Image (cartoon, rainbow, N blue to C red; front, side):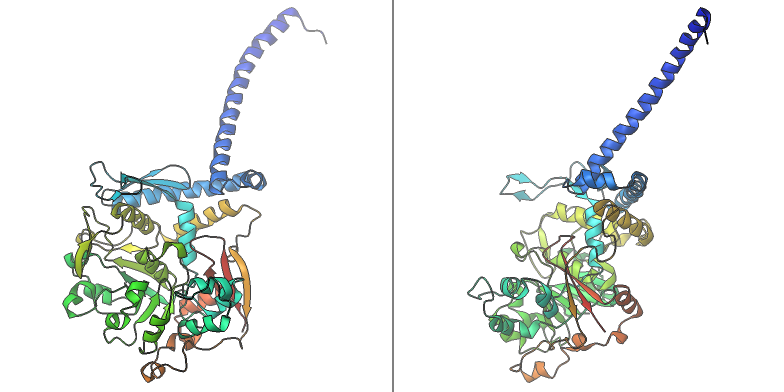
Length: 485
């Protein structure tokens, strides 16, 4: 068909309008492509960058965008929570996984880091996706060292056990019988405590702030109370810290004074954070109390962070964790304890920021003098439903569409324990009659039927599997032990 010159001119003119439309379309497509590139970079950063590109290619883009939207919405809720509850702290969203918590200008940064020659900073960056995955994982964990863990872990008895014994005189347990003699007194065959065992627990720190508010009766109203180190429990401090005593996490130095710390309490459970040695065992044989060894520690960090480990312990047993006596209010100038003189200690601003983040992630509920002056209903903390959705989204982004998204996806080592492999109750033949005939072993022989329904339901949901950390705070290195009926 022949086209006239005038028609050709019109067509050319029409093509100019089409060209403009095409340029607009190209710009839109370019912007979309740029957005996807940015998301791919952020996603690869979250997955550690190792193989992230290949994994990203496999993932359904719409699903990933949906997960990112969920996390952005969750971040907005966390941001509002920090604004409402942070006593001056503000949260600034960097991307779908990262937040920056800032203190207001003029905040007194009193702690000087001798190593790096700087004062404590006024802002802290957190990967909320990783933090959420880590702390939600603790809700399903076992945090007490057991015989089944040492049996299942590949280097359990020879290597790991040796690291938990002071003054062994060797870098490994070449003589397993000798090492077992150290552990027998405090090594239950299987977990003595269970996820969801208690509804509401109080973790009581040692801050001098406790003397500013009379929390004692409130603390005693919890199903279980966890205390740290040498913190005294007596009439003198009863109205401030309460008198209920169920668990106590102690570092090596405090463990030397066990008998003084217990002060006649025959049922308080002692959990040693670091290592054991002959001196500890000699004392344990004389007391009626249950004594165990904390499992999920980073050994190179020694005795630091007892308060944080107490929260881990509580979260592995309790639905709700209330914390008291952690210095989280503005104006902190020195490390005080309610029962002794002030001294140098932890970095207050870093602790304040992280505890506030944990509260706005639904991990803990903070009680302090300044917060006691207002109504505490925690309605501005994201709901469990929001947290569950954000957790699922973060897990999808971390493991990818083809990854294991089930509850055992982090299991690196598996083991099985049969019904006839329960092992001995912790103890030894040369214990004193005080201990031998006390109820120190009640946690180890407690029938599952006596646990609250939520704990029984959780055990069924977990298919009888106990989860342990391999080492420290890594997400994907669990030791998982299945208990067959």
